[in-house]
Amino acid sequence: NGGGASAAVYRGGEVTTAAAGLANNVSGVEMTPETLLHIGSITKLFNTTLLMQLVDEGVVALDDPISRHLPELKLGDPDALAAITLKMLVNHTSGIDGEIVPEHGHDQETIAQAIPRFAEMGQIHGPGEDCSYCNTATVIAGYLCQKLTGKSWYDLVRERIFEPLGMEHAAALPEDALLHRASVGHFLDPRSGKNVRTTFAFLPLSFAPAGATLMMSAADLVTFCRAHMNGGVGPNGVRILSEAGAQAMQSRTTGYQGPGFAGGFGLGWMLDDDGSMGHGGGGPGILSWLSAHPDRDFAIAVLTNVQHGMTIINEVTGPYLTELGVPDRGRELEDFAGRPEVPLENPSTVLGQFENCAQVFEILEHEGGYGMRLKMKFAFYDGITTDWMPAQPIRFIGQNLFLPRDQVGELPTAYALVNPEAGVPRHLAGMGRLYKRVH
Image (cartoon, rainbow, N blue to C red; front, side):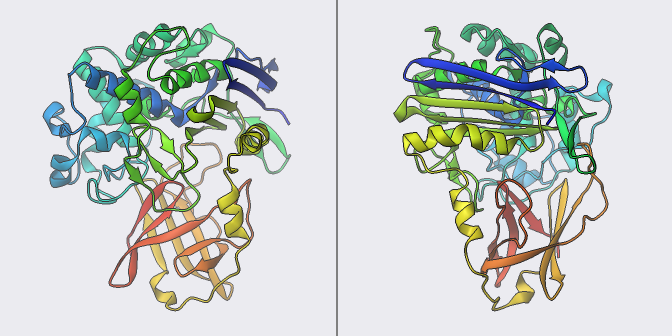
């Protein structure tokens, strides 16, 4: 329907690739296995690899406080800043309220220029006390790498990862993509039912370490993944990370309280109870997924340039995972969808607003039951409005667990109310994040 996808599967020593659709539905350029697509937040695995290389070299230690290496960094809570370690930056336990910040214009979007903007950011939770997916923490880790090495983050990715692994179809900077056949994102136009090319080719470049700029072929992404599966050694025999460093990234360091997301995090990697490791990525009209099962010598990458790419991802990955005996990613959420609604014992405790620096959710009485509405604080994708979106009816399947009554989307989305204080939940948990109660 005017978009495209590319996939690569590694299994038993062999890599198979496939591509379909268009890389750009305005220019009509077709998708090929060599086409570069956005990987979005899968970039966090590359960023964490850079940090772990510095650990290997003895430049830093994971338990170092970030203030030791970045005395110029300021956050809204000085006490929290003093307690945040490098490890917390890459396992999403820093607690920094840092989803993303508004774009400041191309000339003001270097990674270094982003750092002073974090000075007013508060905390979603105390450092190390919980887990909430945090883009800002990842940017800080990337800035740390470039400061301590004296090289730009983009050069570090190229010189320390792309080139050693022979990743020839990969780009770190937006202009690098011009040297390749490259893809662009597409959004589904509800009026025409067709995909429309995004007007946001990239997210703000200052957030590159969190997922704004890296593009590559699905095959090159699998090459990177195989290096991690093989103890830090790429398919070409070149080591990019120590075996101890690769193992540390794959060892669970924290869990996540919300439903339907990863079981927990290692360092960078999302980890599940079935032994798999992976990461997803989103962006303006793109969706990407990487999943690896080291014990089965299997990895798969599916990169799409459409907003509704999860449908494609599930269709491509599903048969492989079924054959491997791996539970389907959406099974837990589908189980939630089948549960009956339960009456609330204390309805007043669930009502209220929950927010982070980019979004506000409100749970309210709605149409004789309950509903939830969402407001974005600023627009960074096509079609985003900063007005309140219409409330959607929700149904509770537990005293603190709910999902939309009429599910819209490719998989059910569930939310949990967590961290009670005097019987009142302090956070809303969903999509890997915690949102702090404001009233």
